[in-house]
Length: 310
Image (tube, rainbow, N blue to C red; front, side, top):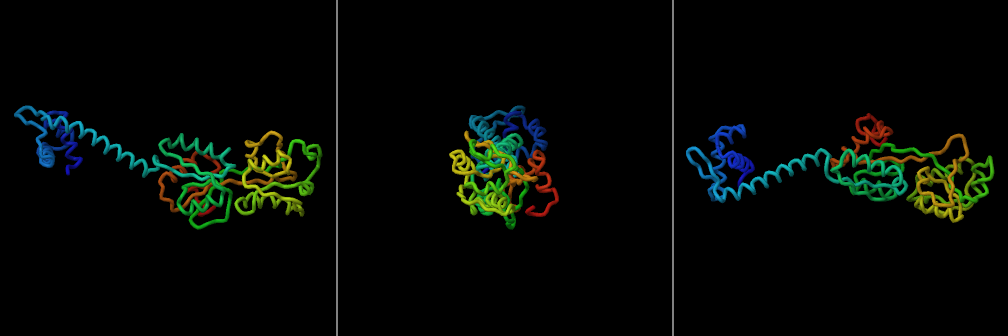
């Protein structure tokens, strides 16, 4: 089989039709150039060049082979460049998991930044609850995860992307809207629609913690996984809910969002998680870009000096 070095030598001679000029173009001397052409012709079993005292001409076989040789060299150059870009994280594919709530605020911004900075990186987006994302991240099925804070796991690092206040969701005709000075104790008397303790544990614990701190507990609780479904039930008059501020982007008609009572508004966090030993080179490229473009991440991404898992 011929080598790409032989192809390059042949193309140079075929385009220059002169061994001396072709050798100068390739930054080599004429004897090794002639040897490479001879080896190529021997491998192919055909004559590619007609050599005269003062001129070089292509044989019919040489003219046909020149077209294919140029094509092969272009493909080799593109393949080399493509491999290098993938190795540098500038090309390839990255799989990102995200919660439903992040899909309305953080995820569009994240996707926009990636597309602007790394246009040749393809995105594979998968909606999952936080626990599913963490398991998929550990198994290598996704490269990055947009999830709620969870217990630390070996080999997983996180950085906070967003901190948003929790808001009270009420039907627009609810009597509390006309009252002043109400507190969590009054909310405990209302049917509560909130996140389940398993797949929605983080938000579930935040919401239920509000009642525990006040020394009360909701009289009736209905568990629903997705924020948009919670808001729909609130709008139907089936109860009240405590939801992240981003839920305002999902708010259906008939639902109003109000700040919770108290001097300090409770808040929910959204974090970006990745594997320390991840093999996809696009992931470090995305993390490096976010460290430049997303200010809140600067103290949480590689190079900022924090301990793993912070």
